[in-house]
Length: 409
Ligand SMILES: Cc1ncc(COP(=O)(O)O)c(C=O)c1O
Image (cartoon, rainbow, N blue to C red; front, side, top):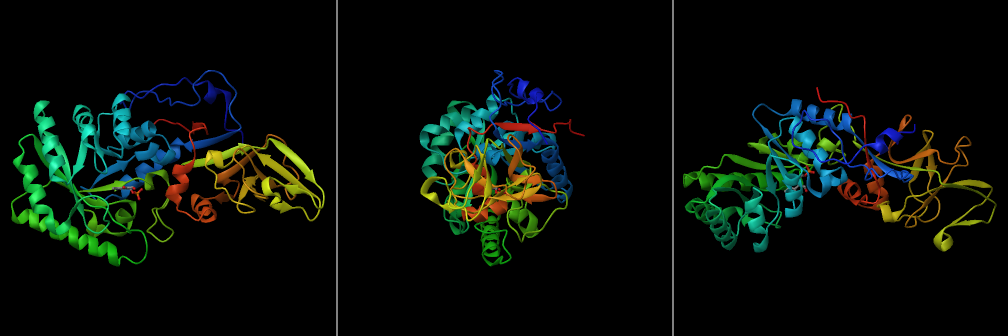
């Protein structure tokens, strides 16, 4: 199906005002009338909204959901992700850089924004000015943030990061009290939340996750013993939300699940959740090979018999894994195996068994076509990586096209 319609391409670039009843229009290609590149990413807006609704319906009563929208919502678009989360009543968003937080504010987002990771001192004034809520643990940073907040005449919320075993950020679980007391002593700071992060929550073996949970509980008990109250305690990512209800606390932080991708093959399923993102390209050239002909750099494929080869104008420069003779595309609902090595701007697939395939037909590199699907997990396998990496690796030069945009119900 030809989904890149002229109408979509003609849409103007706008930013979202933060008003969920306003008509939606996202940046497509700059709106300058250039023809679309014959390789693109499609994001199914109806599916994205449905995923949020299904997750909302699955949330136990009273449990808040934070939407992790860092790295352009894993390549899906920062502002669209913020909008769909907001439509579902999500009050907290999370990013990982000050730039992402400022982009959300400039786009009109009024939700609370938590900025994950640690901040350099020079970033703190930006966080205070744009109401970006920091995760803190280190005493020097707490003092500096408190001073800046006081100068700005604000009482700034912070979330205390607890290291329960991930050993990236945060204060060790059995040393939380002094950091918490330091925050509480600062009049310009408000210890709103405390968090930790699972190293592994979506695999069948929950041994380490349960150890992290018990350490988190130990830290919370130590705070309670000092009469330090924290209203937003959060530990779970998507895997923890799905598989570890005792770790839900007050809020769960979800990045990958609303995008329709389960964090692992073995975690609990919510029926109806489907992948939002597809990656497509059109056949830009067809070559008829004779026995002994090679394909591409390094002559990594040699035809043993007459073969029909289609060239798709998408390569590792767009984020497709740089594999050789591995993986496939779907054309007319059938699998066309990749032959030869993937180059920067092109890859080649064998269409001998798809005689109806012709120039400029659509090929699906990731997503559904007919009754078949190339999932993000399948691509992760050929890349020897994880679905997260595949989603985030699609490069900015692939236009993002938002399809099936119907108003929220
Ligand atoms: C601190 C933190 N919380 C939550 C998430 C969301 O994880 P997921 O995409 O598995 O839901 C991430 C993502 O990396 C994270 O770094």
